Image 1 (cartoon, rainbow over the protein chains, first blue to last red):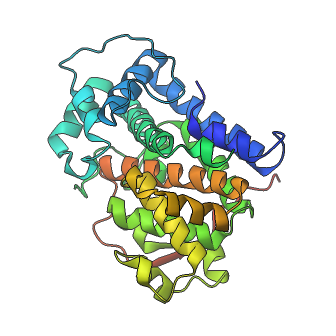
Image 2 (cartoon, chains in turn yellow, red):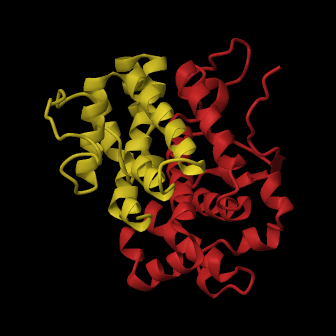
Length: 132
Length: 176
């Protein structure tokens, strides 16, 4: 998995060296750490759920593999609210996700979901194309 | 939107806020800190233009913490409050903002609000004022501003009250 931000930083740095390449490597490390903390399967499920809210079949950079999440998971409904309703998520909805995941994993989930939303948005404006 | 923390501090005895909440995941916190410092340290895109985009994101996402923080590097490049005040709805007609700043703001709105705003004219303006390397860096900044603001808000880590606060620009920690 890479995604539009990594692709843009690679393209924007020309031959792949310099500031863009350095930032690209650091962004990849942050992204990978977030995904590892949540776990590969759930990361893919969260990213796909959010991509679908944006009208995309799968998250940018993901391979489109399907591993359906439990439909009644509190975290799934919560993730779907991240793109356009983040200020409307209630304390009760958050508490249900914390109860499902535990506090530390909820932190990872929050970062992964928010990053997925931002990457979908970067893809929808074709960030890599703008830097080509 | 809640200002009641939905997580505890990972550091015993401290009230929950963003940095000690993120510390529940040390690898995420460390890699984000390293990335964010490098981003602000890079001068490919000026700190002033980065801060213009960050302030716009703060308004649109309703991140009160983000909106009240100022980074000193951008202030040193002339980003005063009269310019920050102009980063509001109707910025297109402001005489306080440069054409480059307006192009950055339009792109910011397209990313964080509505991609349809990136019309042919808006795209041309962006490319006229920014190089591909600068657009890439702006794209990274917007990704981080948006994602971290939403993570902060949804974890309930918005402060109830906060004065405008000037902070040192994030920077890499020098090895001892």
